[in-house]
Image 1: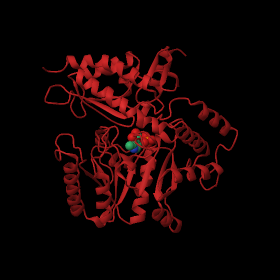
Image 2: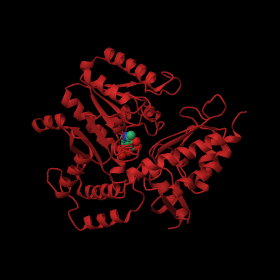
Image 3: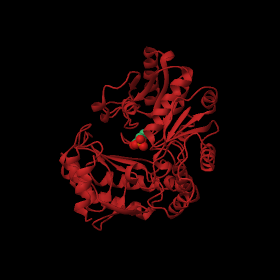
Image 4: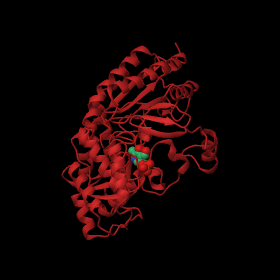
Length: 439
Ligand SMILES: Cc1ncc(COP(=O)(O)O)c(C=O)c1O
């Protein structure tokens, strides 16, 4: 098949996510290696978003491919009620990687199912129903996860079931809780305490947060927030669920983003980087207290592909590579390079409002004037942002451009040279948004 046939058939016979399929212009990918993707029409493109912020160890890692091939010669499926060596090894490895108190896992196919089961576990364990979530969040595309989600993808999926309470983030979109991080934390937690009072602590099972908000802004929690939040929730007998589907497993320069806050959640959810997205796999990890509950009480959840041996064999190889090749450490080291490049571009280009990075989790915001108004509104677009998006791909850089921002989330194996190369393309592209800057 040539490129045109591939694109035409994909558009004719499949639906594309979060869009009207007719308006999609899909990138025809043939293969990928390391930080590069290669199109069917012969283009080489640097992957500045690890596809869906998920190919953490880079594309087509030979050690993982070898392990996957080997796994094909072994057991390819057994039902969830069985015990397998790979299930034993991977769950033990995760128990070692996660802090002391989280030692028990439920494996799913992806992040949404991990979050669904986290809510299920929290409700069953506490005997309470309501879940607190924040507006600047994405937690998955299933019905419940759409309600847990704050961003506009929820709107068309409403109304969902009852019991989800959405609250402001420490960083709302259009105003500030204060001038410095301590103030922001203090006021946000004070506000949250009042919400808990009105909603009734006796009816709230858990609060789910993205430890570092991903798609909705790459927002690291302000100083003291995670500690304060954990204490507030604990005081009110409410569990903390950290969704680390995107920010976990090295993305932020630590294995888990909650390590930055010096806390351990009651439940953590993982996916994406768990297999570097080579095959579908997610996981919910629970504290010993919750695990003990389900040793005595039925866990009313199941999936045909729970603890899938092939997915777990892939995860084992991916985690091995992540550790052996010190990619988490590399993400921490490359943060400095990323910040330096972002600062350089912010000084040079009037349309750059700011760049943020924690590990290799980065975003740049664009502004339309010196007042710092976003170049495109919340959930909106601007011709210059569309042109920037086209420039990036036409000039060999793949990333997500959304509203007034674009992502900088390359695979964690990226070298300094490759990272700077990506920012050179970005540098040239920003002339487009500079031209739209109102002087
Ligand atoms: C923070 C977060 N949680 C959950 C999900 C849902 O994961 P999945 O698409 O694997 O269901 C995503 C996906 O982007 C995510 O970013």
